[in-house]
Image (cartoon, rainbow, N blue to C red; front, side, top):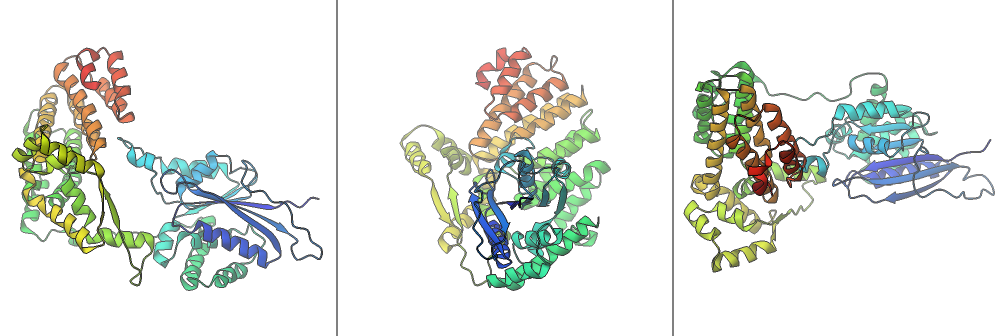
Length: 508
């Protein structure tokens, strides 16, 4: 009977040690009498896909007169024994490409998610359903081993490749003992202690997974006492939230927390004032409508301007998160480069309203500033100069209420709330759909401009055709706008619904 090679594919993103894992498997096989070969097909890491490392193992390397076999350089659909995926979406991609088969393949994958660029850049909720990914992976594979490996790697201070190596050992799909796996890590002589700790954690979790034991680590939730605000002003706001219906309180509390962090207590109080005004309006007390308005109002009031971006980039928590992501310790020198490319519009909107409107008009100063802004710049926030530059910009939030952007957003928010109040007295369902149109207004730069243009197109339909507009029609229009930020699908659907006569110029 012909001897077939063992064929393995590893799908891993940048920084997760996919190459190290491939080298471990090759070293493991070669140390125990196998021919081994590894190749890699570079992806673009976490942007749209992972690098695929392909390994073939063939026995008989230590036999006298053994001839080296000709091994393949890349995986083929339906021809893999083992697939290792460092993240759930990568497991889904392996299934989609046909690498995983019911008759042959053992699929070992982490259950955590790292959202792709397509998921994060969608105007709506572009996330792929994790439960559906798990179900498809389980149905496609002969054996499926999955648990949160990123959490284990973080807990052990290692990288996910060591956890995957432990899970591979526990699955017993390779003809090697656990001791041989561990000896391979020791031969590497780099980060041996932490790698062995992560290996053991992955080994145990994989065994528990196949035995049906829950493997995800418990997450510590703050107690009620820890959540109690110590600031008197914040405590007063939380007390006001208690007057809202039970289904709205959690959303309103999160809105208050977000806006205190974004601006101050007075700004969060304005948020509750606006919700109180809606609740007092005819039909505005509907719990579903009030809850959705609370959610979207908090998001809109915490719009992303240059002040907010600078604030988030200079927080201690961000530096800690970046250090954790790149696994840097106190002995490492970490440099963080921020690629800043503000448009002339964003510069104008950061200035006091009068000055911003003046600079926005076409004249010599406008052209000079626009030319400078078009070049963009790199700011190193890990340096004193770069950090102070953004820190001072973040401090301008004290003057945010005087800025042109604040004036523009306040006018838009008030108009949106008035539309909701007017519709609530007639049709609460239509009012709910109007509230959810805020989903189009998000982000900054070109993304914000395109979303705002689509939003304003829908609001013109609401203002000019209130009697003829049904909740379902508005929902369909919003879905078309979310599906295509350039507005092409929205424009086509407006024409199909007979609503394009007044909107075709704005949509274009």
